[in-house]
Image (cartoon, rainbow, N blue to C red; front, side, top):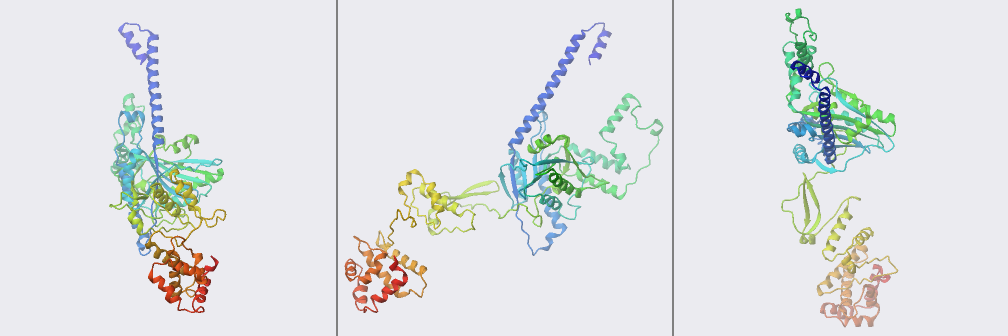
Length: 610
């Protein structure tokens, strides 16, 4: 531009200041460079902000195979199941791409990351999303996979502190306009080959497949439509492929600068080429080009990462996973994946960790192709070590109580509901069952602490002692004086317990009945019977009648061996039925059949050892 202005100035008769022109040019260049640097820094800041804000969701689905439905193994059933994922990714590809001056300057932030990860020998499926897309994507996943579980987790880490890490990009051998094989052409579930390769990774290593995707702009369809149209007009694939943007640029430059860029001689311009007759495979290609362009498109960057204790293992795991993508190849009249080793491993891993969609390693997949590469495992998938959903979730009842003790939180389809139980319902019964380690003690511990903090009276009976220790560690200071610890094994500080103690007349019969029920559980029925129960009931009621010096279980044998003690306790009776037992029934029984027989029953029941 400086030379052109200088020439114009000479024509006008004015001699410009060359120094002024040079400074002006340098100023323009400096401003342009500063703007580009500012734009680059702005994009990096936006990418980092987007990366740090992404939420990692663990998606699990139940493995439910009905043996009475053999049709589940047919290709039609497999296609129907994977087709659900295609509808899901169509919704993602149907989002309006971010555009405008602000997005051009700072870059887009609407990508999601679809990841299959093997860590500690377990294959998991993750979806990382920015906060503004989480609700949308969760609703889409749950609408198509109604029994799936979506849980936000802390980001995983497959890298070993002293291991070797390798990585590949997956790129197309041809333009993204050319299709690959999809689940519609494959005979089996396309995910089986990929997960089987991941299942070979040992527990001490890790590997991941990362597909960073976002909705593509509609311009991606132009090349595929152009090639298909050119071939339908009688051109071969080689001829149609030369009509791209580069060829157009060459033709325009040829028109400007003469015939130096012309691909043909002038004599050839007047010749009419014979039309090319498409072969059946070429016709299939045209159909594939049109079908790919007819569906929602997504810009994607695909990364494969493996981390292992040795370089040989890392390379082997990575190659096995990369080779599993060969099933999607259409070699002559289509597209295929090629593994591309990054020039800088550090930059590659930085993009993997921050889930960056790199335009230099970008390709376009339509929703059908993406569903073939990534979908949640089908119920008939037999790959070992997949993380399945062990039990289905259910929503909380509509009429759930809003008061009472908190049992937990119901999380269903992104909604959290506090689950409570009313006091009246707890009085009926609460039965907690489950195998060891499932959280029964922790569940009861939470209920106990809530009652204690609300000022309620609580009795904890623990045959092992661990639950009591946990409750004591959580005891609030304001209720420390209310705590009574009854530990029968503590011989240094024994606590007396009178099983016949009561505070109201109604409790007398209850205490007696419970003690008799305990004896029935402790001893075989042939050792005790109705007569034993009858005698024990009257003896215990007699001992309980003395309010000044209440009796205990240890006094029961003495009631049959010590006549003075017996007369003293009977004198305290106010119940005529119990008094009649001593004055009529016991008085008319001989010593051999009376006291000795009852003492023998008591001895057999073990009361003399108390």
